[in-house]
Image 1 (tube, one colour):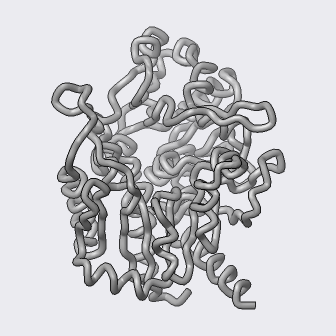
Image 2: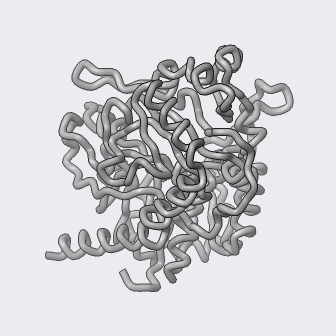
Length: 392
């Protein structure tokens, strides 16, 4: 693509106004592409009904009949980063579009060179086929490939509507079903200067997690599940590493069980419920300790967390469960992997034992492997190569 291509990025920023990590996941694509000189717009047309993330006034009222909070949050995010005239959101309740005018939206869609469907968030990609190239970003490897093996055509039709296919599974194993797509490895782009290593921090390992986002999948007699399965293997870790503490900002789990085992537990929507508090939470942490989804561990696709990449960019070492990412990322300093509770214990002690070395290494990994300019330039180069192959 040229240095001034018109690119549309999809996401779920408005859909989840109390999940700050989701904002950064999509926003860094938009900001990173803009910094490369592209004419970038954010489009949210997921078809997902708005909801009260915090349960509303009663704590158990998740239904809503409007998208006011969603639109307000998205407008605030876009304004904060100089994108006031570069976003559009369709409310599925009444089909109304917000953001740029309808005429401007049609003009942009009619002249766009590329649409990047991050995490497959676009409900009907076929509606956007007038755009020359649609790129699908699979951020949920193993689950994606297994779902494509189902006889149900709905998900396959959605994925097949794209010309180019990328995956956070940077080394997808042959044990997964063959989908018929050419999965190009990619990873989360990080806008490095938005993450500040010089920020003061608490002497706590932390993470942010959802206990179980959705159900398990089965393939060839094996079950591929969520973080709850993996976390159960490490429940006794706090007793091994005391007085070091690990704070979990979590949604959807038995908090009493975790506290009884010595974990610090805080509500994710309260401590990191928007983009600013999420960034503060990461920057104020000493390091990250986290498990991965059971499917990522069992499938070993080389997936790496967009959240953990933000910790690295903030100069915070990451101790995380192995998903095969050591094939593509350096491990041992700044980024440490584990598969057992003994290895997790050892990795935490190693970080504490030479903390300054690990913080420097963490930022260096972010600069070398997650810098948005590098990640997105490679992505766009791959798109160009695929377009040329189609022409030939």
